[in-house]
Image 1 (tube, one colour):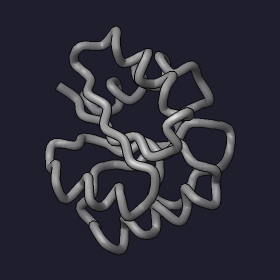
Image 2 (spheres, helix red, strand yellow):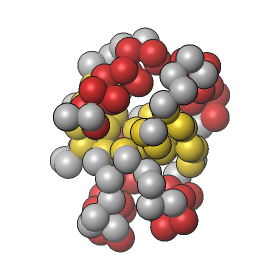
Image 3 (cartoon, one colour):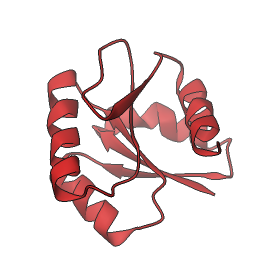
Length: 109
């Protein structure tokens, strides 16, 4: 089981939820901002990765706060064409299903 924390607005994460419904080995959790992300990470140490679905400036802010507050946080990813913040891996802009497949490949080695 891979547990992915998706950080973004609910309407942005909805397509990922629909794609994840076809992937029984994938569990998605959600957060809207840095504070909620830190709370989810503190409460659930099973989270394998964090996917930032935020505008570039907010992704940078959340990534910086995570690195400062929780240096041992799981790997950070973003999807899209914009340049990722330092310490965040960029996945090419893809469909939600392709994003989930790419993350599963990255996390399973």
